[in-house]
Length: 348
Length: 182
Image (cartoon, each protein chain N blue to C red):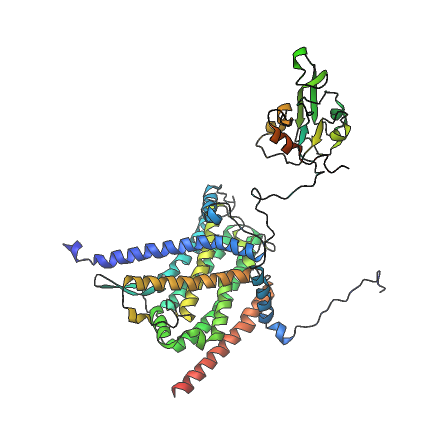
């Protein structure tokens, strides 16, 4: 009898949501490797992979298979436990962030209101920042466990870069929160549906957040930790086979999640501009349309990430630190100040 | 200190202007340039479907020639093997029997003729040395192979198709050798 008292509905609903969202994140990360190669090729006047399947669409499958089939090499003098732990941490923290993002509006299935969000905790955005900070551990452990001076140096640089840029990111986020008043992701989206997108009120904040997101994902121009030329491939130099696959994959998942978080915070999440969707009701297809709209915005951001990667050369380490501490941090503080002043003036 | 050449250029070490220090304007300009490349024509050639044309003097795989009646021209004189700097050609001669006049032009012919494509440097000296115009270098590559054995081409692989049985193959293999010579 106890079994019938458990709310099986919530259990299955969350289970299906988790499965769908994690699968979506993995598939999108897989195809963004393909998109990266295609976009890089088109920006460089060449074609990119077009042999594996029509237009090369099965290329990520081939890459995944290749990574599984390669030989696992673990350096003899490294700590084996830490060596295996590093990529696992990177992957876990990358996937965990997808739990609080609202993927669509609340839909109505057989009388139950199902929010398309795995958990709508009341510290939504703070959770994402906490988990992203944990991602630093993945890099540091990977660099340390490789027992290699270059990897260690690269890992240290990566950690310092990620920590420095988290500050400016948090401050630009604070300005958004001053506007919205609540940390929950769903109320941020609802506020934007009601009052217009946050990017209109916080253009400078968006710019700062975007630059810091580039740095958090270790993407060019901030990719010194995994630089191919300077640091011999950086912290994932000693890794082979699927552990390397996990590091690379975790980077792409991070990129996807950053894109989705940016669209949620600044561009309205699943809201279609100029269209009043609340008037359509709570059917399942409204939720689906919202999901597709969010994916489109994320895809545009991912394209922007890749476009920037193949345009700009890498920052030198001192230029990077200079930018993070001496330029972005004061700018974010000024942004916060201006936002506070304007809010006080307007609400008086 | 005196300059060694007249081509010395002074490196500009001016500090960055305010506009340059922002990084952003030049980044946007760069991004515009890259974006315009998305719409330009790509110079890539889709290899097996399209191929670039070779010149008529391109030195590729060897072909053993026949005359117009379809008889093999090679007499196994050994001048090509002698002139080959990489010693890639080996052959064994045989005498033409009375019933084989339609197969071979002269009385002596090559029973076994092997070229080791891994040794060959495609220099064309064998083509220049041949007195019977029997070997020439055509316009194809040697295709890839897994083992060394696949690269030793014997006479059947090298012979041009018989114009009596396969006239199209003959014309195609002949290519435009000799057509540009005035």
